[in-house]
Length: 424
Ligand SMILES: *Cc1c(COP(=O)(O)O)cnc(C)c1O
Image (cartoon, rainbow, N blue to C red; front, side):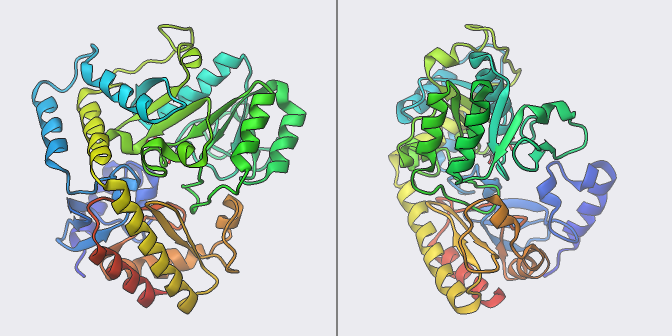
């Protein structure tokens, strides 16, 4: 496979972009990442003209894949041709917020922002402002974007910033607990209950392998937060409008969080984030309340049109049936392959999320630390490059989720299962 153009582009990129990329994970593949020329249904074509089945799908946003339906394309083009944005409100923002509020029971009001990171930053500020408390509880190995309060490592009260450039004082207000550990959650509330503004949790850990909640776990978080006057914030940036269809993961699990952060799918491939929740809490945001929140590009009309038309298309067509059933076939097929070729590994995921985690003992991971013990070296150095050579583009590291889109076909699934069989 000739990849000279990708190599040359990366060589140039290293001169002008730190690490040659604009988001770190893109540079994970060694020795250089694949540069994309264009998408084609469930596949991508790279800068050298090679074609791959694409399970990266923008790292989550592309529910419909690269084969964008006519209605979505024309909405985007119409908006873009009418002047891209105004700094004044537009009808499409109201319509998009109404769509979300109609389908997600916990959401009465929405504030749109421009990324998942911005959504979690604003949600944490809102929770702190609303409760008058400083501490937040997050999961070890949970991911909430590139925000100061949640980029922490280490357990419990010993959490420290996981990146230079973040003052220790940010981590002082962040308490970490392992996912799926009800006892640890109870303990943290027993000790700090009066100071905790919120628990911020991905309903499914989807940035460190894919770890599903055990029965009762989110109910425990719901009870603890309610009992102690803290907010439960579901970070549905990945799971929103992907897991559990239009009612999101919270609908699937029957949990009503106080606040929800969204991103990825709701922008139809354009930059977006959103915070949603009850009116009483949401109206604490400026200008109705005092918790400052603002953004030049927030509610961008092109993004709003792309997101709303994408969700409308999904609601009116059998998108979730399609992606979930292909996801099921992939996971079933991969389970057979793993049983035969690598019984220590674990096939994880639900709905349109899937991954094979290179666990060492055949035990499905219960939390981020379990995923962290996987055979990352084999995945990075041997397995992923072989899959790429076979025309299958997997996410850039062992931990990121992989995504089925409406553009994928049974052929994509069969080819992928066969490639796993050969490469494992
Ligand atoms: C992707 C992601 C974010 C960050 O979103 P960005 O748009 O990359 O800033 C936050 N939380 C979760 C759960 C995510 O998957």
